[in-house]
Length: 275
Image (cartoon, rainbow, N blue to C red; front, side, top):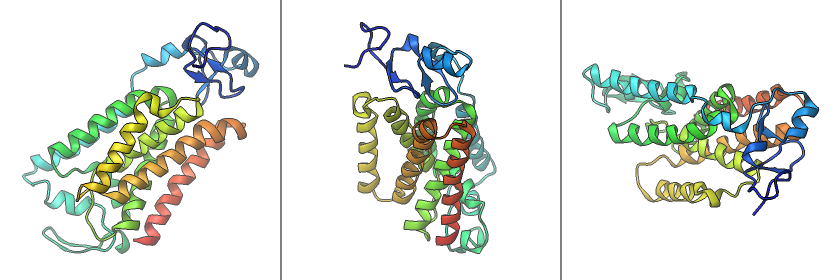
């Protein structure tokens, strides 16, 4: 068990992003990304925010994403449409279009690039949206206070686009909807964050949950393998750049955010190429 370098009798929860020394919750100071120890905080002249304060910070972006998903679902149902009807066909992710019950759709290959994003806010039924929003809420409460609202929104966008890329890479002609690609991406972000802080994901239960969800993805028909795996990979890369590569090798936090955004741009470009 790792102990805090300042308090040997206390268990260390994370590692300082600058000096890599283990620190307990009382010694955690929020940095631009991740946490610093008190000495590194003083050396860099950053504003001190104790780790305990992060727990009380509301997850505004997470709540907004959940509200948007629910609003779109309710709007579709309230318009007199079933979840398999026009809203799904007009906004769902599909590479090559064709004739659908709502009319002819061109798909991403035909120029309907917005499907890369809109598909992530559409759901097939009540259970589908309930499960995705539940996991989004749980992961958002963990990640948004740790990363900050702007960075959390950025990694969610990268995960969503990476999931869409995975869908079009593996099953371009299957109509796909749901936030699960982005949610799997948040799992990848959480793995990267814990890895950067020296936390074993299997000690937290997250590692087992990811493996179990991947098993369901490959075992149960009708689940988007490309969306889940693509989102997971893209999310992990985004989290790794923000919490590990960036703090260690890029002095300006804005460079880490720009590099993270490039992952999303690359995913979107790849999706357009393979559609």
